[in-house]
Figure (spheres, rainbow, N blue to C red):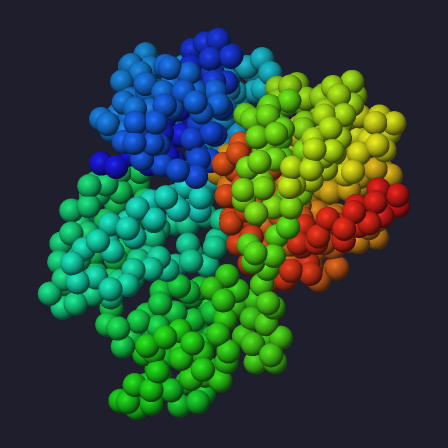
Amino acid sequence: MPVLNPDIARVFDEIADLLEIEDANPFRVRAYRNAARLVQGLSRDVKTMVEAGEDLTELPGIGEDLAKKMIEMVTTGHCSFLEKLKKQTPPALAELLKVPSLGPRRVKALWHELDVETVEQLARAAQEKRIRNIPGFGEKTEARILEALQAHLAAVPRFPIAIAAPYAAALVRYLQSIPGVRRVVVAGSFRRGKDTVGDLDILATAAADSPVMERFITYEDVAEVLSHGTTRATVILHNKLQVDLRAVDESAYGAALHYFTGSKTHNIAIRRMGQNMGLKVNEYGIFRGKERIAGDTEESVYAAVGLPYIEPELRENRGELQAARAGHLPELVTRGDVRGDLHAHSKASDGHYSLQDMAAAAKAAGLEYLAITEHSRHLTVAHGLDPVRLRRQMDEIDAFNRERNGITLLKGIEVDILEDGRLDLPDGILSDLDLVVAAVHSQFDLPRGKQTARILKAMDSPHFTILAHPTGRLIGSRKPMDVDMSRVIRHARERGCFLEINAQPERLDLVDIHARMAKEEGVLLAVNTDAHSIYDFANLHFGLQQAQRGWLEKKDVLNTRTLKELRPLLAAAKSH
């Protein structure tokens, strides 16, 4: 089976989890965590690098031992060290680690204190109120664990879009190489840019004698074939991702692509519009009686019901049909509109590369400016900066900019919002920065009123510029904070500051609904990568999809401005 970057990252994360349960050296655990994040963010496949004979130890944080494990995974499909670790711990513990709010430390405590090894035992312990007696847990933690466990058991498996993307790309390349195949496209929620996908819907057009279906079910990453026919097949990959392939006629390609892209409610609305015009709309085309009048392209589908083409990211039946009818569809922001990135880290805090390396990578990605925003001192796990170290970095940025390297670095900080709403660094140093990106990194479980008040107070700081990853969610592992986002957005409008769409694939925060709410309130949003590596600038794609799903246009995004246009906006926010 092919081993893609997400597979390697998943193995490293699992190793880190098991090592933490075993009380291994924290630096060793962190090395695997950092390696997982690095590999996940690489723009190139590790497999390709290994086949080309490249030295993996040249990657930051990848020593000889980690490089050997990566080579082993690529060449054999497994990791012997992970298998060894699994033999040393109960196998069911891995399932416990998938329950949100249960990290390795809590799993270890539950195992040692209550002999909890399975989700069933965990549920019983919570229901019997035994968890609260473990030191450091308590009644509230017990209640949260039970709630998270119930949600975990009821949830349909979904994959973050950035995790699904490499598998989708590999499948598309494979299918396109099959004789007789003409076109291959991934439809469904993946094409609409949703932050998670339940499966992959792939459409292909091919010659009648193409072996595309037979080749699909024998793809080397297929673990199970659920169904197999002449025009449709469904498989499960080794990572549990379900993939549906449908072969469609060229004459019906547009109708099928529209139908299988969805969303369901969008399609139903289009179908009803067609019915009101005496038309039948389905995946085979647009019909007047028995005559097919459209369906070879998606544009023809919309034109048949009197509408202009609607971008996939908008197809959620949230007003896009009315906007299309009125000629008011947004001209969605694109990658070419983005001029800079306002949230990035170097190895001065928890990044992997030097300030100079990050600048060079941002320039290579076509950016004109980059804000260096290290963590502040409160986030000790990220080696956050105190005022002395921050002042030193500011001097380094000034020196870099004097050299005229073809990109401008902005002086910033990702400062912690403390529990009482104060910022983690004094006004004296914050006032000398180009921008202050503020974020919540602790106390995610405060009650709604307190959490909202905490953020509003931070926004009232005279140096506050951008609220980073506003809800604090981590997809699949941490729920969004309970915060009144409508109040936060209105306060940002009144205060004259900005909010972020964080493009890190595990965040994608703000969500699309809140992004659209901000647009309607006139609050500018910064689509930032939160880059910790030179490879992370590629994640702008995912952040922009989130922005597009929120109906954002170029004018709605802060960092589509030139540096000359941007500076007064940053200064105005800080001088409010």
